[in-house]
Amino acid sequence: MAPLKIAVLDDYQGLSVPHFKQLDPAGYDVTIFRDTLLPYNHPDTPQSVKDELAKRLEAFEVICTMRERTPFPRELIARLPNLKLLLTTGTRNASLDLAALKERNIPVAGAADTGPAKSVGADSTTQHCVALILAAARNIAPDDASVKSGGWQTSYAAGLSGKVFGTVGLGRLGVAVARIMSFAFGMRIVAWSSNLTQEAADKKAKAAGLPVETNGEKTFKVVSKEELFKSADVVSIHLVLSDRSRGVIAAGDLALMKPTAIFVNTSRGPLVVEEDLIGALEKGQIRTAALDVFNIEPLPLDSKWRTTKWGQDGRSQVLLTPHMGYVEKGTLDVWYQQQIENIRRWEKGEALTSSFF
Image (cartoon, rainbow, N blue to C red; front, side, top):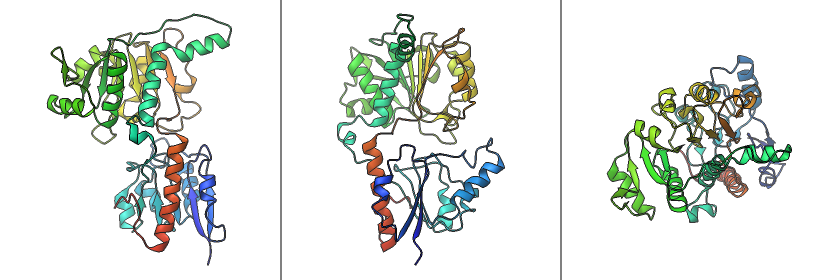
């Protein structure tokens, strides 16, 4: 019998290698890809790249993806005649056309993070978000570049104590970051999302171990979207990307922000109209943007995010990281090991862990 052909996609760090070496090469033919091609369903992806992606994947019976790095829309799935099992990481993946996969009777399963961060309530994305806020406020990246190039003090920090932290979204991650900014820095928290009520916010504050109010002021104060963008010294995005939330933040919102404010996005790039954000930053409308997510990932080499001289000639400072919010070795090791276990379960006809349907 021919070996089972397995593709492991988008493993930038090569962390999957020792895990997939557990599989006997006599029975498994594993190919690990260290790069990502442009998304099949992105309007800027040329047909030649779509064809390249389909050709790359068409021979594989099992595909192991990493989060949403490679989307699987219906059109791509239709071009993968040998696909029998699709494994992703995390417990949801909005870039998979689950209906198309179900029609083909292709099982889909995720991988849950069972690492130590889950037991202490400050997961990887929360830590990364707080790190970006602090780095932006303390001007870490420009100061590092200045010292290394022979300079010294060329800027000043923005204090956070007693300032206003605005969270767009008050789900698990929004609460986690707001809790830290409140508890550690005494920031006042304002929150907005389309269906958020004060009653719900009060329950979330209590569940996070915070008082519902102090001196008559709500710990998580629900405000209008306009008030949040006007009043916040730090605006941080914590929404799930959906058709309804796509582009929820646009030029009008950004125009309300204080010129001293910091804008942070560790959720998903398309939540913000990217052209509007770039335009505001090119005009220097706010102090700093700190971004971990983008419309297209990895960023093209000619992206304005890469090529613009941020922080110069009146432009805002911009701090960029390559979607590192969830990228911890321990987490990725757990995910890859679960993928191995699910391949073995699938071959035995057993139920998959973290199955999507």
